[in-house]
Length: 134
Image 1: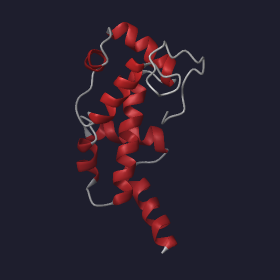
Image 2: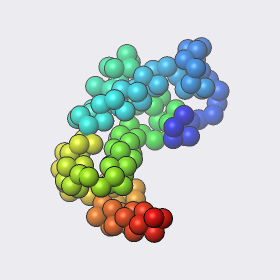
Image 3: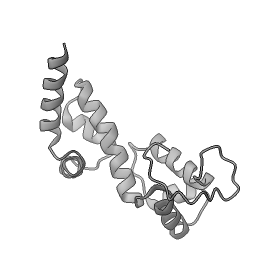
C-alpha cells in the first residue's frame, strides 16, 4: 500500500485482490482517484466507481487508509504537485490546475499544510538542493 496507512486487522473480506488487507472496493477507489486526480472528485463519484454507497464507502475508506476521503485526495494531489514542482518546467498556477485544484488559493493552502511551506518556497528549496548535488 502506497501510503502505508491501513488498519492492519488483516480483513481482506475474501476479495483475493492481491493487495494485502486492502478490500477490493478500496483498491478500486484508490486506483480511480489516482487515475482521475486532475478532475473534480466527489465522494459519490468515487463510491460509484467502487460499486458501493457513499456512506459505506466513506467509513470503509477511512478504516483502510487511515485518512478520510477529502484528506486522501488532497494528499494525492499534493504529492503530484510536489513532483511537478521538482521538475520545474511548469508555472505554479499550471501545476495547481493540472493536479485538480479548483483555485490557486486552495492549492497554496493545501500545499502549505502538507509541505510546511508555500509552493514557491518549496520549489526554491528543491532547486537549491538539486544544484548542491551537481
